[in-house]
Amino acid sequence: MRNSATGKIMSSFTPNPDLDLVLVRESSVPPELVWKAYTTPELLEQWFCPRPYQAVEWEIELFPGGAFNSVIVSPNGQRFPGEGSILQAEPNRTLVFTNAVTRGFRPAPAPGEDGFAFTAIIRIEPNGTGSTYTATVIHPDAASKNKHESMGFYDGWNAAFDQLIELMTA
Image (cartoon, helix red, strand yellow):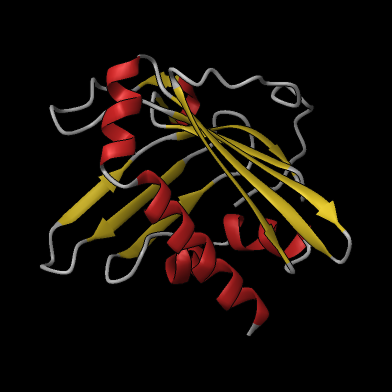
């Protein structure tokens, strides 16, 4: 894993409510620990998806075009590999990743009928001794946004962030 700051390309993105999902959370976890939880494979395995699902494999390269790959396992053992790419990595502030392109900005294959393309913008801002976490997930069309929302976006991402807080305050 290589660390590299990349500029501020997504610092002023304005979400479109017809296409994007936004989750904002306040926590007592400082920005550097939220960043660490999001960028350390061994930590991601412990919190990234709501239990009883598990994130069992991670490959992360923190530079534009670097890998953001995972394998999620369902309670019945079904494996869901996810291959994507980092678009921006500004330590302790912004992480942008997508499944629309893979390592080296190679276009990803079209998602299967159960999938959809997205880009996630994770913003971490200092807030007293803790942080404000904003996850904005951008979709190419309303159907993809609605599918993601109906799959439980808010419940799932909230539960996962609760697990991040639990892990980083333990």
